[in-house]
Length: 259
Ligand code: XBP
Ligand code: MG
Image 1 (tube, rainbow, N blue to C red):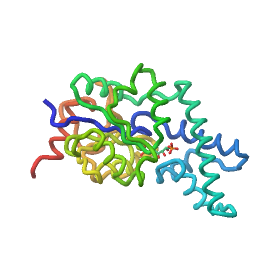
Image 2 (cartoon, rainbow, N blue to C red):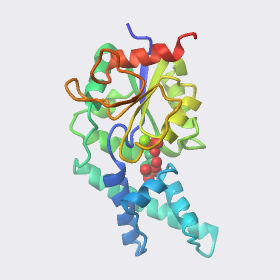
Image 3 (cartoon, rainbow, N blue to C red):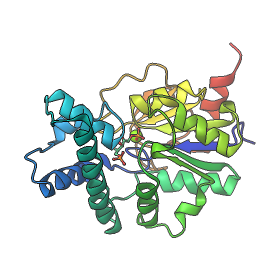
Image 4 (cartoon, protein in one colour):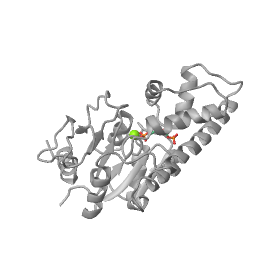
C-alpha cells in the first residue's frame, strides 16, 4: 500500500523540543559547575545551533569568543569534561519527564507500526540521550519501537554530512529510496538529502522557522493531529489535515516520480 518501507526520524527538535529548555540549560549548568562565567541565552544558543554536536558547539563558541587555554590538549580535555557534565544534567532533566514528544509524533509512530512501516533514528546526540528521552516521554517501551538508533560519535562527520543517515540506512538494510526522513533543521535536511533520501519532511520549530529548506518537498510547523491546524510552508497535505502515512506516501511518490 505504501511506497516506502521505513521512516527515519531526527531527535532534537523533531521528536521533541529539546534544545531551548533541554540541552541549553544543561550546557549552562555544566559551565556554572565548572565555575566558568559562560552563559548561553536563548538567542545566542540559536546562533550556536548552526554547529551540530555538543562538543563541536562548545568548540565553536570558544572560537567565536576567542577563548584559549594554554594548549590544544587542555582545551580538548575541558570540552570533553564539560560535555560529560552537560550530558549528566540533561539526562537528569529528561528523567523528570519534563520534555514531551512534539505534536503528532506519537500518532505517526503508532500509525507506522500498525502499517508495518519500520522506524529508525538518525541523530547527532548520544545514544544515552536518545534512550532517556524515549524512556521518559510517557509511552512505555517506546525505545523498542525503533529497529535502528544511529546516534552520536559513531560516524566520522556530523550533520549536515550524510554519514549518520547512511549508517541508519545500512543498519536498516534499506536503500535511500525506500525511506522517508523527518527533520527539523537545515543541517538535518541537508544530511538526509546528501544521503540520497529525497522524501524529506521538515517540522519547523522556533530555532529553525527562519531557515530556507529550498530542496525539501514538505515543510510544516508540526506533524499535528487530525483536528489541529497544520501550517504548510512548502508542499501540500493534499486532502489530509495532518502529516500521516498518506501524506508521507504522497511526498515519497512525488520525490521519486520520473519527471
Ligand atoms: C542536534 C544537536 C545536538 C544537541 C546536543 O542536532 O546538534 O548537538 O544540541 O547533543 P540534530 P550532544 O537534531 O540535527 O541531530 O550534546 O549530545 O552532542
Ligand atoms: Mg534536529
